[in-house]
Image (cartoon, rainbow, N blue to C red; front, side, top):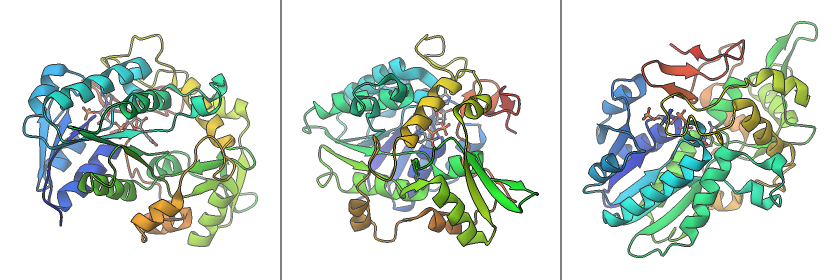
Length: 358
Ligand SMILES: NC(=O)c1ccc[n+]([C@@H]2O[C@H](COP(=O)([O-])OP(=O)(O)OC[C@H]3O[C@@H](n4cnc5c(N)ncnc54)[C@H](OP(=O)(O)O)[C@@H]3O)[C@@H](O)[C@H]2O)c1
């Protein structure tokens, strides 16, 4: 056990942050986590964990940040670009950095995503604002000193817990197969992330600030194609399965033309905040182009293996770990939008509208 740290988690008590909070608390660290609504289900659940302090407040508010940062040694930041838009995400990430620096924080850990649009030569078809916002801040961070406040970056990716349950395979009575219809092209790959392993790496970075001084760790299970998803399902459940690539037109029918953000977000009325349809079309285009581990979104899986030899290394292992069964769908995580006064809302309503989740 390393020396216990006082760690502040910013960006709410959502899917990613709640996993990181629990992992840190179980390891003996004192975790303070900010949420706008201490009474919502996720916040109440976390509050029951020893070592986790839930504090009411909005991450995107200077006074709140100044108060929450008192006595904090290490900060974990996962801003919500989905909700607040690219412009606000860049602005608030920089302000959070500056306020943490002034508050005397020793280690600033930022959860980011790769700068795919730059890697593509700024090809507009690969521009995903909720990815670019984090990536542009990461470039800013790389230009900052690592003294007196050290910094580290950790890159996530599409959560298996979210993506494989949000778009599960459907049963084809005609052929007796479970058919996975995804907009992933013939050889395109998902660089899926297992949230418990991601949280393990986030904790490791907090506990090893020197090893990750001014460094970036990119996390993922393995680049996995649609065909491999179907094979993994058959291997783990015995159910015959097949992958069918969706066409762009079919994909667009599924993705609602509504803003991903929610009313009351700092950036909701910002014209640069895109709709779900626009964002996920480009997000999927990145995967279609990521054949194998060679496209715009790459991972050094050997480095991850060295750090955590028992990590989840294949989607089949992930399916076994969660008991994945398309006949028993369950919400492993509730990512999406949260509307003040309404609670959690489902991003993908049957008719493309927002749906109450509870
Ligand atoms: N879903 C994925 O597969 C995936 C993969 C990689 C990266 N990400 C990134 O993760 C971030 C989202 O975090 P998450 O995946 O953990 O999602 P999440 O569970 O849906 O939400 C995280 C937090 O965002 C806050 N939030 C929601 N709506 C808001 C609003 N209108 N204004 C201000 N804050 C709002 C909430 O904070 P409160 O607790 O204060 O309500 C919520 O707890 C995004 O930037 C996304 O790009 C997602």
